[in-house]
Length: 328
Image (cartoon, rainbow, N blue to C red; front, side):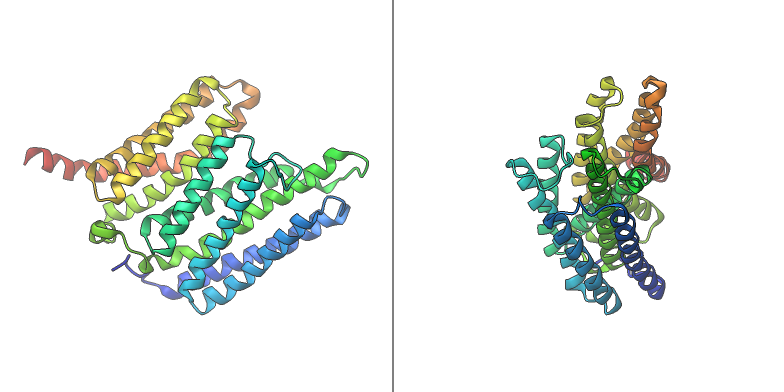
């Protein structure tokens, strides 16, 4: 049993193929932009990653065009599995890039554990693992994309005698790699929900009811918000006083997701509460931030507020069923 198949399969097929094409197009544009000024930043590692990414993008064309499910699952596992290897190298004192890829060791460890658990879940065709990988892919697209836009102009003018210029080029490359990888993850996994199972709560989670559609989106949105809450708290606390609440919200959303996936009503309620908490977190952080760093709050808002909006919708949809349950 699995999620309902999309009613317009041809549309999902074309959208997936378009996402893969966008990934290949971005790879070509990135190469032209980053190599135009200097190639001194290019290392054997960055070259190997770039070629591997192109190979997986071409494999994605085959996987999507022919709908090879095993390949559509294997490609995201390979993409994020490679990131686990990168994290291990970083944590063991063997950095592979010049820039600080993971300034927080605890965030890197948390991410590696989540990726590994998700890979096992994907191999077992668990629905929660697909949601987790879709969320990580979406976060990679959003975070990598926003940062790449910010770095794009700086990476176009290189001073060959300044070490920082090479770091800027390599860091821009890293952001673009994240976007391309995210596009490939979403392209491969988004249209094949029907190939995954949700265990004992499968019938509930695959229902076509409006509430369940909203809860599925809310779950993915919350999984997008969790890593960005931890990035905020552990790496870039714009307002130090709101770092603790960010970690608390990440914990609440994680616990809520686990409970919801197991079919517990309390899990759905926790996701709604946590989503509303994200709205409060965003508002408080923006209000308390110094004017010069308020734009950074808007960066995090891009990852937090979708879950907040969906939590409000789900809360309204849940109100009547919960009221009936309390009256029973």
